[in-house]
Length: 196
Figure 1 (cartoon, one colour):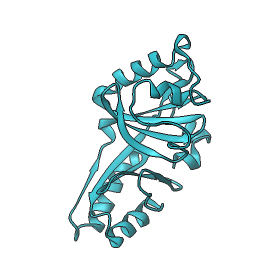
Figure 2: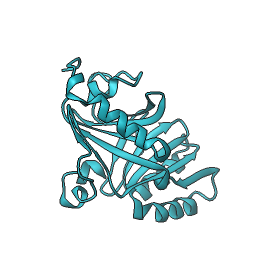
Figure 3: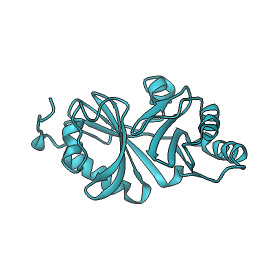
């Protein structure tokens, strides 16, 4: 979804004006929808249903797969996160719930409880590494990697979009803190060049 359409006018219209421009620019992704699906993801039939509804392949461990309208990220051995537009989330929950009614599962619209921030600039790895234990080296954290971790001891997910862009997904309840932390971490006075 974001990989396919991120640079189009439609998607750019969902972006807020940059909150900050330092070592990297930081802006919020508007109309960001997220659906959590938990179940027996080792079951081929379950994965096939998710693939048919999302329009993309189920991701490998620690990865994210992109379709025309949605992206599916691996969150744990029994959980996927499906990203798309907020308006599609309710319909998506209904469709998945209907198709998976014969299987033990949990499918919830998490859109209101999540916010997504877009970091753009070659120094995004250095900025985020100031507060996360995750190894953000290009070799370990390349394009298309999605990882649940922490920033400043707050739970987040980090998506390596490409070498100059990344996304941070956090709970809404701590999103203002995460945004302020990102702004402080990307100040010019604290610029470092560890990965470049």
